[in-house]
Length: 424
Ligand code: GDP
Ligand code: IMO
Ligand code: MG
Image (tube, rainbow, N blue to C red):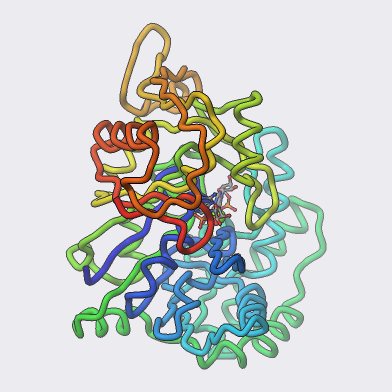
């Protein structure tokens, strides 16, 4: 499998980091293709935990080239802090490369993200306030600064001036804030960040194409997930990039026919951070138990995640838009304590019943889930490594998801550690 995409099939935090790390051991390069430090990808090896925001989850292997692709938005301060954190923990980061075409998150992006959320009041999206949306907006408006601009003082200064003309008006006239001083930004970005990042800035598109031609294996690591996708997610409660598999092409520079496997990652239940529709949400003791057993607090922002039952129409939709070739189901162990496990098989919308994801936002908000119930297995599965040893109740649950979801379940996670998974 020369190029494989790993994509979240729900609302994020499915365990993409864990599975990327798992596959990274046998590949040449791992490319993050979109998002920014709104992501939090956790890898646990021998009980030691690494929470990554920008650095691809292949970093722990000495032979892998981790690449931050052109589709990512990069806050250089955060990236350098992450590099320092990894180096302090004995991880060699010398192979890490950043695309010169990736866009920079600037200080005013953070501020505008925070202010926009505040002014939205009760309609706020619950963004991570990391400046992601404003940075992608500037990219689309063609007033963004790119990583390669750090290498050219004149261009950087010129582009910053152009951007600040608009940003400082917005900050002053709309939000009554102090203007951003260009000198300070230049001092930080060109004085502090550029010299440290310069050796890592590369034409990563040519690099991945070259490596692909040489027959080397490339893993494309998605951040966020299908239902946070700007086009395919629950708009406007989405992120500002395309986590779906198509985004892996635009965000890395590989073409669609160069990708031969798309691995979806799903939790055995659902979580969501931030606002937006969530038909199977549980606001009861079962929901609390999922939070407690699954440690459902954001890797990145520490926010409590909303929890609910697995949603089959969502899986089928994700299988289609990502052309999934297989599915990894994580956190099955979190369900160990449940007597009954539910799966949403369709929705009632008004007087109608549908097994498709309601296309209209108003219908999705009103959709009442219809469940199929499964008996729980009521025993710990964290130590199991062979599929034959899995409880029959869990195998029945997985077989149903596979058959009704229309995608092969190839692996399940039975705990956070790197070796806590089972091949099916
Ligand atoms: P990502 O954003 O998709 O990479 O996922 P996160 O790292 O934000 O959240 C997933 C959380 O679940 C992390 O704390 C992982 O260590 C943990 N995790 C991953 N797979 C499993 C699993 O199979 N079982 C359990 N109990 N935890 C898991
Ligand atoms: P990983 O890669 C879960 C959510 C935010 C908010 C919405 C928009 O770890 O799965 P943004 O800051 O992107 O403009 O926020 O998207 N969100 C995530 N939720 N996991 C993530 O990343 C997320 N990245 C963004 O909570 O609802
Ligand atoms: Mg996460």
